[in-house]
Image 1: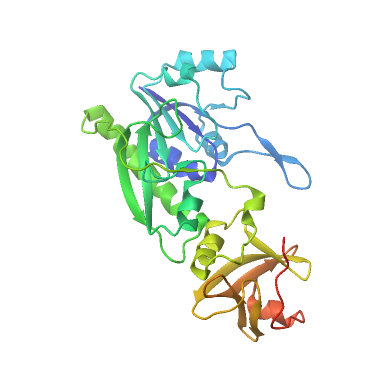
Image 2: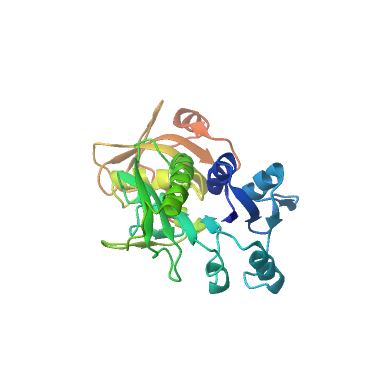
Length: 308
């Protein structure tokens, strides 16, 4: 019995690798079209496509989900399962009704919390201590389908969206294989989502702007959640700066005011507490420690970061 795998970014790669390693018959991989990137606007392949090509798996990249030729090709496969891992588009009924067994989605949160497009980043930004993976049946409404299996993972204080995504992608692959086995043996039975649901939006570039009136703890989580993209950024003397690594420390100061700027200390006031900047990145420059940044500029204590 065959599988059609829908996925696009790096997060989906471990799940596809796990299916290949498990000996599953992957009839096709569906991924987003290649996109132009960089200054040269060269076409870049999605990470899932790169792996599929390497493994000799047929790749489909439809511009539209209801393309007649694309749908006809999926029907000809007659898949047992359709697996969706961070594909990036909502599947229409014509696709959801195709598999003989189920359409299974791998979602990076403990549903019903953090439905939506950016659950990993928002879990960090909101100061959650744990998150996890949910496999579920796909329904018409976003991330509302019955749960098949869930596994929890701790969010470490030094995690950011990049590191936590990597951990969750590996966990997602494990949970997916266990889910398929459980569905086939009927040891896993779908159950409705219960509890308070929450939805989180996709993160946009402008969402990375720092609001210094937030508490130091909130800013610490915000910087982690915005890394690597779009990055938590601010402006100082007209210069745009990304904060890469910060610490929340005790003390008091005015929001956005530089309270200490000497040697290894670059401390800024927050709405409550203080933020110690450890690493940062001026626009067009490499990531650097706070000490290197301070050495190259004349920054006076009492100076405020610019307003947006």
